[in-house]
Image 1 (tube, rainbow, N blue to C red):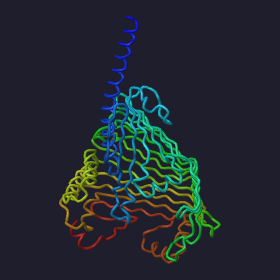
Image 2: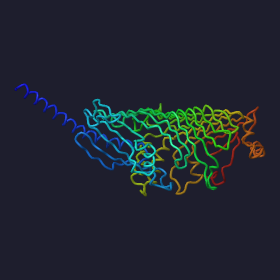
Image 3: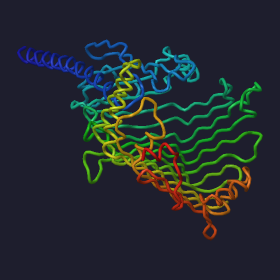
Image 4: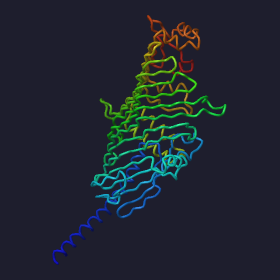
Length: 460
């Protein structure tokens, strides 16, 4: 009898402990949910707001609304920019309330969150749910650690559909991905992939439309990855990559498709190696093969922003969040001007570097602009203010003779002759070359000074 009593007491203690742990985990899960929304809002042009949160003992339910803010005033249907997700939150330390739910792991965790799209929040989400036969198209399953770190699995089901709106056919292989987030948003790592997407867009029935025949769209091996860590100024430093193995676009009436293979984008944000108060951002775009009509070749583009004041970047981030919350703030422009001046105090540098090799020839170009604080600005920006912002700059262009002739073929050869006669281009061997520089308020093209206007010359 004493043994049975002891076992019962132990059982009651364990049950009470588990219930207490589940209640505590529920509190932690709700706090994690609020923190996750706050962190996501910092680095997004989405307005993210909690609509409902109902906390139970072993599980909780939430609804979150997302509204696209950037450029929303230029779109005709603002309602299409808003949607919601549903969150089913299973409390730890063991998420037993999620037992039997697909994709919910049973390991030790503070909580497991299963997030799906809310089909009732938007007309196109209702249509999407109908295409998937009532199944959840997109599922995110997040395992939350006791320290606040989390790991998320992302899955979007494959879909095959015909005659859906403007789409004659659609074949989507699905999306798979995973991401890990450090506690309090201190780091973010993840990768996502879409093996294939094939679609045919119907020919437009109206004469006003630009689409004259069916358009076939094909995409292969699309991948994205991110590896970032929070550093100085509360900024996320690291690398973001995006690649497409093949992108093909073809009109039914046109035999030659537009084809890009091994298209890649790589963006890196890092502290300045010589000045830790500044930040460098470098972005590179590359295409291993580009085929458009008679143009066939490869190319790359590099866009870099160097010597960016870290404090100013952080302030711009805060300004963006404020604009999302208060889009009609009349003081916003004045605040942005102050931030811009702080940014210009660090004398930022902008670099645009391009390179291309096609069947018609080759091209190399580079532009470097060094900016500075322009002092007191006029109410309406003009050329004189822009010249004050530009401390110095340079531009170099080298283009093969055959490629230059092909580029001006439609405009006529006279345009090329005029540029040669004016000294803007010079022919060296089988390449045209041009060099420009701006310094001390003066512009030179191929070492020849180009007047900027009487008023501006007087100001200089």
